[in-house]
Amino acid sequence: MKNNNLAIILIAIILTSCGNAEIKTDVSTTVIENKTDSSNAIIAPKESEGNINSKTAVKEGQPPATTAVKSEQTRGIQEKLTPGNNEILAHIDQHLISTPQYTASPSGGYINCSVRVTNTLTDVTFQKALIELTILKPDGSLLRTDYYTVINVEPGGGTKIVLIPDNNQGVKIVTHIIKVKSNELTNGEFVLTGSRFIAN
Image (cartoon, rainbow, N blue to C red):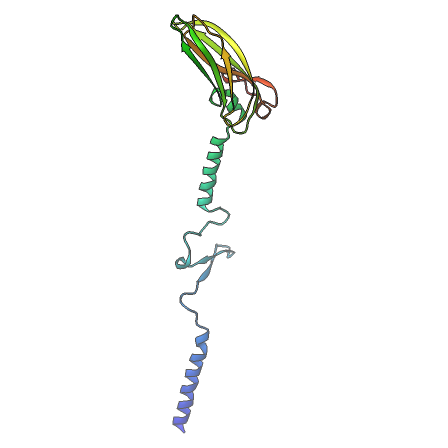
């Protein structure tokens, strides 16, 4: 009888311990613990360090660092690609390029002279541009200054050519764009550019 009671007790202990086996958690399960401050208010649940994916861990309320870096790089590229209107107008000779071409004459001066005006901007049309053409003597002093107008210089490499009369004294020609009219840049007004530009 004692042996039967002992066997029943052993079976009950075994069944009780096996019945609790389902309650035990797997060691690999994520452990969450609550952090509290001195006022016992719950701050935030914290995952155990072994289960945090370092690639996706981000401080609350902040974008991932890689996103911030990419947006800074994108903004910098966009600023380089799309300078402001005032910047373009102040440095117009870098965007609306005027290039004099001529041949030195054996008797002095130059012949077969022209000025090529090229629009390097991809989204701006120049309805009108005023070229200042300075002719210099052999000693570098000013011989004369002339002005020529080109009309409708298309974007993305649009070109206009102005023919310049031969000259028997000048040896060097310097050109600058000093005034432009553009719907995109100047709202259709004819404004001074380059060193003469005054920002609004």
